[in-house]
Length: 284
Length: 302
Image: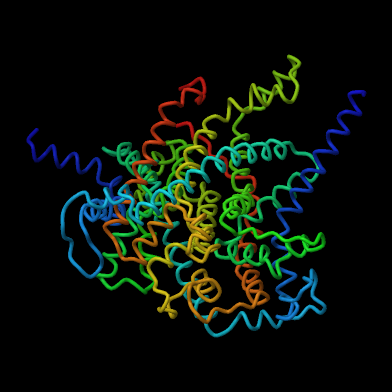
């Protein structure tokens, strides 16, 4: 076989495999969408239907009951605090590490990084006891307040790497012009690192929207008023509650609804998410 | 200079930095150090939410090996977790790396493929559980509808099959790992490839002699994060099995066992002991990876 023919065959095989993988990975979305438009009878019929006979929105109406909006409101509150507060906090801390010389800088950063090895569950159990003592259980406080203290080490690490790539002369120039540290931080440096701040906000949004573990731990199955969507959906369909809703079409409608915010945010920021803000200086 | 002056000077030179990082310092003290110390103390006592701590001793650690139900669940969940980690970490590292390598070159449709591969990463854990329970359902699930055409059916969620099923489901997240690799490839200077091409290297040689060696810091990072993450699998498995760990505890992961011990049985002492054992395992494995990291290439300047 000539070199050219070989390359064409190889290329075709490659595209075929990649397309196959794409079909496999899109399959869950296909199931989610088609079944969400079915009636209960269609969704549970045998032989199994692949497409609904008529595309009806009844299951969406059923999915969005009064509880849904309560859970949604709670989720939005948690999201707002975490995205705004968490990002701001992560930026300030990263700025301190990357742009200001002080005694203990490196040691503190090393200690903070090493806490990533500590399994979350080690602190989660005693925090449950602590929260119960100060009346935080079954409130949204455990889901929001901790995030304000640094916004997570992964985010601090990422922003710090970025900040370190900016020459120190910017800080010196701002200092000579008489700008305070806080002013330099927000008026001089922040505009230069907007992309990574945006990426951090998106990462926190996704993590928070998907978070199931934290509300599961600190909000009882009876405190329905405080459910976020993740636990609300869980207890409605999967948890060990006797009157579980078993309608597959409604379940799939809720799945679709829960995907919408993630997909919308992803749509807006796909470039930076997909291209990846390159972690320059992971070496350091 | 007197002592007080020295202190004053030290404060003046350093206070700004500490002020900026103070949220993290407070956070570490309140939400990490304090509960970690508590956890250690709990693990050495019999304690639940109602009764005060009593009976100082190592009974919670001994209970993990004494043949009781607690020790059975401990060993079962540890075995499940290791099985998962041993299969999932290497396979996902290789597969995501391969995908990134294929999609790194800017050929036609590359970007669309990246987007499609990334989409499943956006599915929230609770949706993953709901969705796959539906897809795999023996009566009305679409997989068994297909198998029904051949007059057969398959229960994906029995004790023998559920781990394999779960690992397959987890592989829908390949896009997440893939984009980290793609980012890492960006930091490799193009001039290296040009030089290699001039010397007559083919694509495969470029992969093994440039791309892989140059991305070893990221391989190292992903390996460490993979270990830490895989040993703490929780949400997806919890939702898929409704918190039970599945038929015959076949999908009972280590952290699920801790969760059930703490929040269902309210045995905070035992749960804390289990947490500390996990911490020691993770720390030892991480240390092992660091100690054997001579293969990581940090560039000439280091």
